[in-house]
Image 1 (cartoon, rainbow, N blue to C red):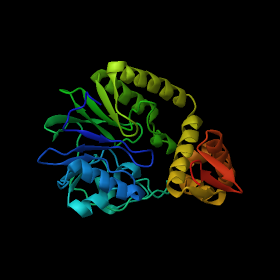
Image 2: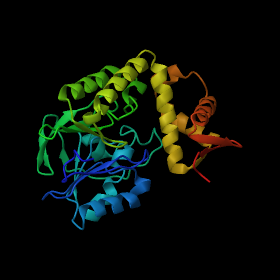
Image 3: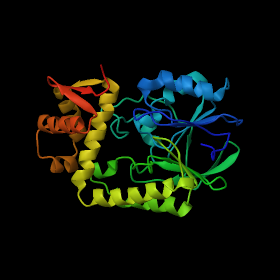
Image 4: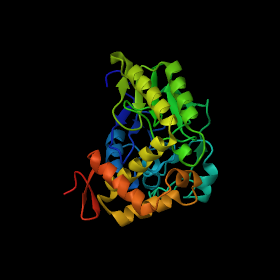
Length: 309
């Protein structure tokens, strides 16, 4: 995108791995977010190409979901780089609490890593020769942050705003308010009036063609729609989690899907209240939903990713 500075490179991935934002020309070479662990070879290669032979000095995470932090350990082992994480989760990382970090209950993988610094809302960090402000971005993940460069008018929005939506409001699944927090994050973005948004997934988009305003309008409508019925957010979350696992595994039996559902619901009274069914019935329903939207096909009790041979 022409409106982005030459010191910043966006490496767009798919939905299994988040995008990487690389600042390669600094004394402190930095990548924001490192993707999912099973795509580590691609992550290593793409970031090495962006760095042009330089050593990576720093990883900065917008949040610690597995698709944003899964490459941390790999890159830290290879480069000896520092890792900067969002506020509120340092103790979980130190103890490597996979349950509270969400990895166990979502049946996702994230190799253990060590952090060096904790980001704080309002803090300014230098990236690519520019000052970027750390901004809170509660909603999808209450520990998530964004990065805002006022001089450039560029926002690195993580999963708070995509061109077509935003990340699942996961706190609501645990009975913790999240819809109002997501709405407040959208209002913060609107007040910034960014010229360009670099999302955690999907291509950067610009207000030059009205795409930022359109994305915000659609996101506001969606959060209103979700908040009117919590089951809508829960249905979406289950589809996303199962689709993510299917992207990784390529094929999953209904029994494996049911085990995933059971793990997700374990100890979660809020989810059990929304789904008074056995895991097998929920898994079958979600498999049908994934098939209906074209994400998978069901063959003899096995769900197959739609592009899998």
